[in-house]
Image (cartoon, rainbow, N blue to C red):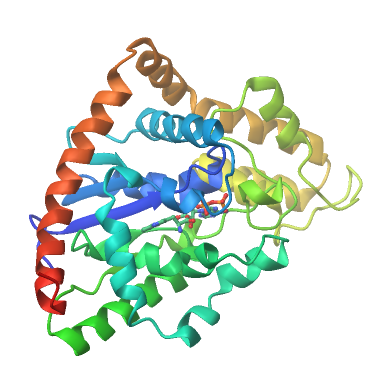
Length: 326
Ligand code: ADP
Ligand code: TRP
């Protein structure tokens, strides 16, 4: 275990769409909490997003929006480094070097790749290599801890496998990073009860407008238990989402009323919407403030790129020397 002063924390998020509350509780909130515990580096994974986004304007707009939303949610640029993945192009060099030791079998076992094909994405080499680029993202900053949701667990295990392979082949080059997954929020359900995801269309966005957000909450799928009857608490999406926003007492109160009967799902959904909307109110305010300062985001990203390049450059010199380049 590394001590507090040197612990390096890293995570990335793809600008492949608009951020939702699954992203917030699974990755952003834990990442924001960790920024006080060491050197934190968080990036907008635009190289990764190229595997699915084909419109350059959309990629640019989404990347800025992810930066804005992350800052609005509490990422503090005085404490953490926020940068664009593509501002550190050396990471693609490391990905190439890692790919020369990466066993095909390891990549063929990737759940995320198989899921993406099952959802109709084309089997490109980039999509297949995604975990190798992700390993490079992590290893190029000598990262210790990687806060992510549960769906990324296998990718971090693959990163460790690749680091071990490199160390066995070329001598001690890389640290072995650890995934940091919050058990209570490892998989936030979407409005259909499946894992919330931009690509499943079941998302509730962090900064959606009021009408749309209410509509999304009101369309949470439930069973057809009548108003008077007791309701099943087990795997109730309403209760699961409410627990993210409510105090212990508020949650216990809702659970009691679920068990007692006499309250319809519609009313519970209204309570959930209210809590959710209140929860993000200060962040919406902060977001408006940031938007008023036209150069704020660019300045943060420029400073972030500088710091990220400093570290990446140092680690790449070590890697190049170890493998015999130059
Ligand atoms: P999406 O599935 O919506 O495309 P990403 O793959 O961009 O989301 O995920 C970004 C980060 O948010 C990752 O760390 C991921 O684990 C986390 N995350 C995404 N969806 C959820 C969810 N429903 N519950 C918990 N964490 C999530
Ligand atoms: N694969 C991650 C996702 O889809 C994003 C990501 C890219 C990432 N590189 C990373 C996360 C490095 C953590 C560390 O959510």
